[in-house]
Image (cartoon, rainbow, N blue to C red; front, side, top):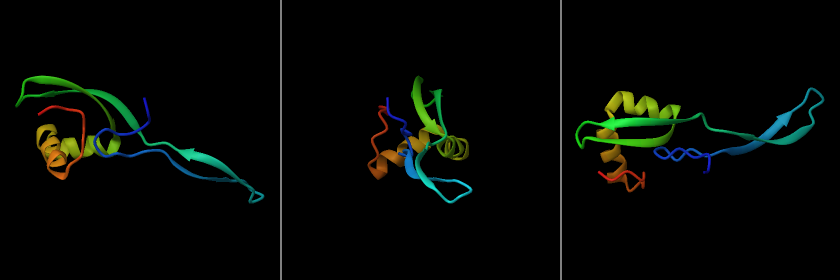
Length: 82
């Protein structure tokens, strides 16, 4: 399973670790991901999603069902059947 948020699409990015002597070595910046189960009252089903902290904030703000409908309207494939 890749380290990617199913809702926002956040993925690891590459960068440099810079030492005190200014030597640059490669490193990865990983997204802050959580595996969570959500209940959708509108459909009466449980879904398991791998989401980032930003996606959790959007779910708290808009509600899961409304957020999933918005993503579906934008053409994002979340893997959840609504």
